[in-house]
Image (cartoon, rainbow, N blue to C red):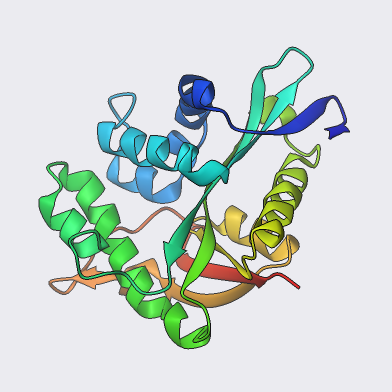
Length: 221
């Protein structure tokens, strides 16, 4: 698919380093919780890189936008997730307890409270899994050219082909929340960061306008 000087293509195994480089320049430093805890103050974060690399190739769910020279200028990284976390050590609380990076552990604890607050298993009782849009990034020089719309279109088409009925998109940023709503997602959970606490104190409080942590879903018809 070609549009405005770029094409949407599936991410390939050989795209890992270039994909991570785009994420380092955008999501790693722009995401509000990352900023608030100084997660990538040393340039990167091994735990975050591992998290991103894991989902880049999970069952071929992720897509890239490439320019006429083949350079990656946009990404949408997705993966399947269960509606209720399994009690097998893979849940966010267990991951946080085992995490050696205290900054990343704080984010994992926020994600754990997000899961419990959203309770998607109650909202979609007939579904066991949803396709989760984990990460999205656009080269700053390529913004406002419809890249996110086209990446989502490709993701939705593949999801429908594979019989997936629900897409999920979590937003820690006010800007990503606005994007989710423009893309047709419905907010299923919203919590002020000041109310996401551990031991009576907020875990992470990003700078305004990023005041709420949210979960969005979109039912594919």
